[in-house]
Image (cartoon, rainbow, N blue to C red; front, side, top):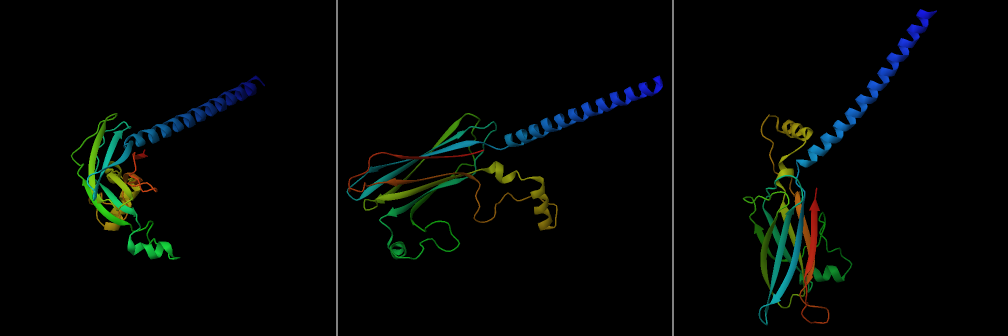
Length: 226
């Protein structure tokens, strides 16, 4: 009888130890998973892109549009940005080739596109591949456009490429790319057409107020990624 009770107690102790071990393993696995996820996220940059648009009347016929970009590294890793660009489009007056579609019932957005094909007044390419931004630091970029005084409203769109996320692909994506190529070579860091990873900011900016007076002030937009 004593032997049976002792055996029963031993079984209970072993079961208790097994339960404790299972709980400990579960906790360790959860902590490891959280640490792995957090560590993976630190491999990628986190930054804010602030775009400020101002203008100044130059002559009776021309106006200067100035774009200031503040690119701040809010993450824990060094950022080496890819090249970028700043584009300016005329919104008002509406370009003649869009007037019929906008005033009528036709959709001014072309099939397969996401936005109206506004009249471009210029594009500035940002040469940034030689720049490095340490965590907590920021870099300023400036560019300018000149437009006729008949232009009342413009759209400014800025983009800075993210080389880190463009090159660091998950293991399954690398295997898929290799399978598509049928060889074990280097995975290209080029993105499919139409896709661009990075920081984007855009804003409408009035050069002339609705009452016909020159607009005073600036327009700011902020974009961030993590």
